[in-house]
Image 1: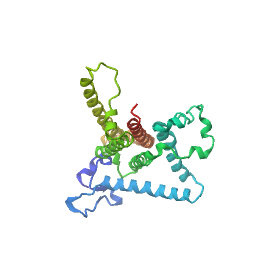
Image 2 (image 1 turned 60 degrees about the horizontal axis):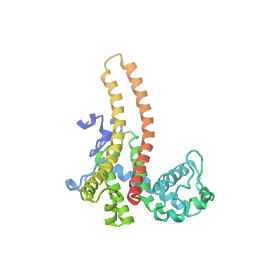
Image 3 (image 1 turned 45 degrees about the vertical axis):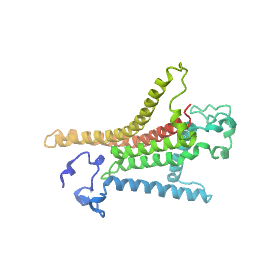
Image 4 (image 1 turned 90 degrees about the horizontal axis):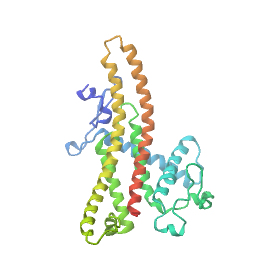
Length: 309
């Protein structure tokens, strides 16, 4: 096999081949129909696969709902539950109702709390029709849903042997973070106006007038840098967590190779395999957790843009 086949980090390193065991054909080169002008890589293909999986699942689910067919079965209920969770527990409560909150109590605070307690507006959510009614924050749902399910499927693809983890690549997570930055700025500009959004980055200050010409530009620069840094951290956070899981698995499996010619292999090998299985199960949890964190932080950034106060 090629030299990179011995790379224990191939799962989180992009390549122009898919690496399979010898009995499954070994390395499979990815066709390059565009030559050197546009090189297709493993992560590109997996990202398209992730997008298609999300599309086909939710297109089928939407057709069922539009046709009035009740959602049945664990598979469809699972995906509907995830979508409703992001809508009702992330986007609507975090972004709230915006400028129309004066006509509707206090935004989305009418949702029940996690401990079962309800606010004074809970009667507005007694009927199912009220819960599913159109909400001002729903206009941001397509983006948050897209990043959540795309990140989730990419993370889960990394749990399949011989596939790969696109979200373990900084270029991929960086692009996702850059998209979030664009949506954040666009959302704030649409809500407050282009000038209003950038002006609102600096909070009102009760300081002597003589100090404002010095403090306002300084704080504005700090806020803009903070905006860029927050989205940069968003990319690094996802990349580092996915990369870390595969690093731990690679290290654990390396123990087997280190003692392969020693009698200790009979002790180390079972322990390493057990450790890999345990870490693999933990990675399934991390796949969902990191998708949720990315979606939550993206929603938080959008909320701070449209509600600068």
